[in-house]
Image (cartoon, rainbow over all chains, first blue to last red; front, top):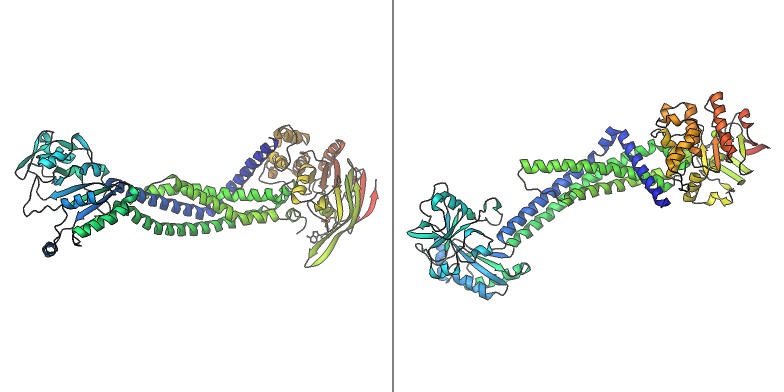
Length: 415
Length: 224
Ligand SMILES: Nc1ncnc2c1ncn2[C@@H]1O[C@H](COP(=O)(O)OP(=O)(O)OP(=O)(O)O)[C@@H](O)[C@H]1O
Ligand SMILES: [Mg+2]
């Protein structure tokens, strides 16, 4: 108890002395921590930018479905189409979906989508809704929610029911006609509105790998209800959902095999794995991290040298004080700790200023540059930790110099 | 309490050893008041630094209460300085950035807490004793020479040390102020503190129980 209160007083006194000595030379202190401030600022901004990019990708992947694999038809030229016909590939079709569903044990379910080229009649001019014929599983696999009514059901597809589920913007533009039970006219058929989609709006986020469909401006109808001219059974997209997230790549392999066989090795489709996005990002992040590390390292070393310089000056300026403290009982360790505390406080102050300026920088970047940024706890703590580390590392030598000062010389007796 | 035998101190300049103390034998009893006189350069300060465990002799032994302090660790010698020895210098040696109170409080940072009284109380008591109770917030630069020296004495006495060492404490002061400083030393001496004081002033030395004179690093006269 006695001992601990003693060391506590010692610690608070040490900090007080350090603080006072730093505030005594404000300009000098300010200039000496400039390097640290810049370094910390840069590191923080970079972490925030990197984190922002990562979170953006995570949001995108969430939208696309982390367990999903997309198989998309590639539109062929006539020449290619002829060749494809010769090699007996009939494009992406429902049979592919069935093969995938039953031929691969990793697959939980698959959904089909066919985008039609027709447009509905009686729409306001400002929007041109896309009509998509889908299987009933589409909504579930892509996390599309119905606001009112229901989505396309199995029976609708099986019986060819003329029903439709429009998105929120479509409904808005239809006005009074955009209600459950009303009809939308497509080609020459009247499709009854059985459900209305939840607004998707702000959640929309385009990815680098694929565009996310804007469901607000879409009308879903059952697959097979409209046959267009020159039509085959070609689908636009098959979405495959894998049972477990970690089986996605295994599933991709087996899907590739299945598809290669049934398409006779014709590349008239393309496979997209959203999880791949994460991999790509991680790859670019690695590069980013190296650059970050280099910049951080250089600026902190430069900053640290500034600190060491100022601490050496402080130590030699206060030689007498060191002698006095030794005379009244300070050990070499006490002196060492005192000057270490001072350089630590110096760099920590630099760290705090750096973080504050860093936050400002990040705010400017996201505001002016329209970049995605995210200030997470590591973006604050890591630079602070680094600044503290610099304080200790570069304060060590000056503190050691102070500690080994001969008190007899310091007191001016012997020189 | 103090037993010096065969103390030799040399300084090295460009490889040459310059002898400063050439074999000092001295014993000082508990509660003694010893004065050290001698011409400039005779080694008085050097001896005092050795007595104060701030410097080590090249040869010889120094027993403080039976402990061989020459061969003690930095830690142990620092503890002795913190708890048992008070230093008063000719040039006061106060820390300019600290207030009077903080200067006097300084030894508490390094000493063992063995007194139950709060630090503040003890510091104030000794500041009152040297008559500076109304100046505790002042910086050394705002004090007169006499006030600075009284602050230094308060600092030396605040831990209630067994031994106070003073190196020409009145050398930089006028005689009237110097006389008052000496009174303070007498007060501490009266309480049983051992005092060793270097001085040029015969009158000052006459206050002491024991007087020694150094010349060329040797004790040339001893009178009790
Ligand atoms: N670091 C050193 N290197 C070489 N010689 C030194 C050193 N320090 C002191 N001396 C010498 O040691 C001798 C004794 O010095 P010291 O300061 O102990 O004498 P002093 O009796 O206190 O003198 P004064 O009355 O002037 O204070 C002097 O000749 C001095 O020049
Ligand atoms: Mg001297």
